Image (cartoon, rainbow over all chains, first blue to last red; front, side, top):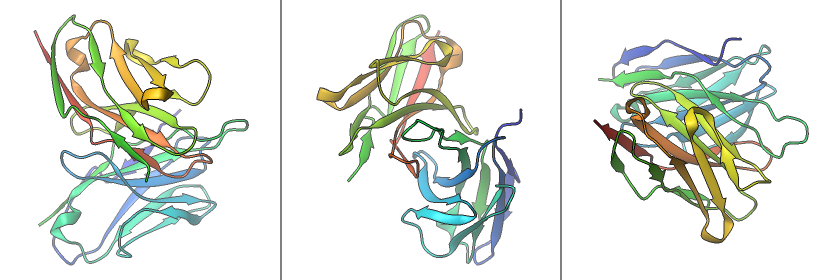
Length: 116
Length: 113
């Protein structure tokens, strides 16, 4: 059973460019969340997708957008890249189980984005 | 506002010694609490979680955590640390119904021989 997978592993871009990161959730999971982890910090919530719609969003500008496909995989897009966007981008998948009040998020290995 | 505080930025323990990593949370309702571990350059691995019931929860790799509502704490413990436990540890709180998870800033664990 494959866990959460992300691609690419590493990416180098220049300021002003656009980037797309991809995530495939763990088998059986229908919800995908994206997090940004800057060096030396904890992950910060970007947004969450469920049933192909953005269900909740963190404090990130509109330059950050996403998409969820019918197979539950997801993309994170960042436009007009800034130096400060350099970070590890983590995807987490989950599914709210019957009888449980919240879900458990399982994380992928992340995509390391460097903006020059 | 909901938040998670990990007071110790880094901790150094000797191999074989006991470990306790502190975590305090601020959350208005019933908290759903997690501990994750992250090795350098890697994603986060779930160590254990608390949703309800017994306040002492067991996790993988010999870790346990105790939920203390009166102290708003969820400290992680291990009786005997191994060199392979050196990593960054994150405490986190989840919301009812899913949605986002809020993470602390992390505690980096160093293990000395």
